[in-house]
Length: 111
Image: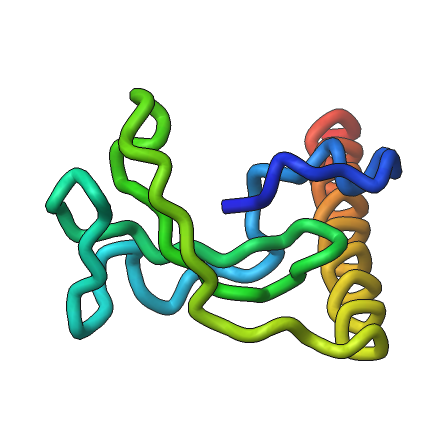
C-alpha cells in the first residue's frame, strides 16, 4: 500500500496504489500480532512513497472505514542513497510493465 504522498511525477501518481513487487506474505500473515486501538490485528503494509520506499508499517485494518487511526513504522528510516536507488528501481519496474502492456496491445491489434 502506498502512501498518499506524491512527488508530482506522472509515474508515481499513476501507480501510487500498486507495489512494484508482489507481496511475499499477506498483510495479516506475520507473527506476533500487533494490535491497533480497535483491539484487532493491525495490517502490515509496505510503503512505496518517494520518502519511504519499501519501508514496512502497521496500520489499522479498518482504516478505509475510518478505523482508529493506528499507524506505526516497523522499519527504521533509510539513507538518502537507498531511497534514491529504490525509487529508481520502482520507476524502472513500472516503466517496463507499461512497455510490456503496450507491446501486448500492439501485438493483439495487429493480429
